[in-house]
Image (cartoon, rainbow, N blue to C red):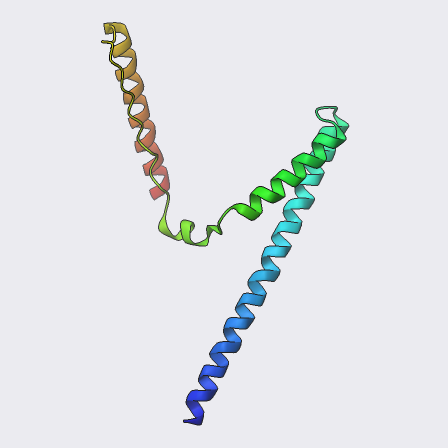
Length: 122
């Protein structure tokens, strides 16, 4: 039975080690994001595209958004999600030219979706 205790203890230490490593990686990734966002903001301030206060807010917002997003590990394994379908309800009858334009746009969207699927398979 001592062997089972050793296995449980090793499994526990493995879990603690993985959690510690994941925490370190997350902290490292956030610090890298902050550094990159700060560089971008500094460049935009130099070019006069934003003020220093806007740059500080921009960097803070980027870090907050990164912290709020769930980890991409599970979503990346599941594969790309299909775009959400949107149905537009209109009580008025569309004119013939509007119908043709809508049909043309639908055809273009379907062609682009098929092209995207083909590129994802490659």
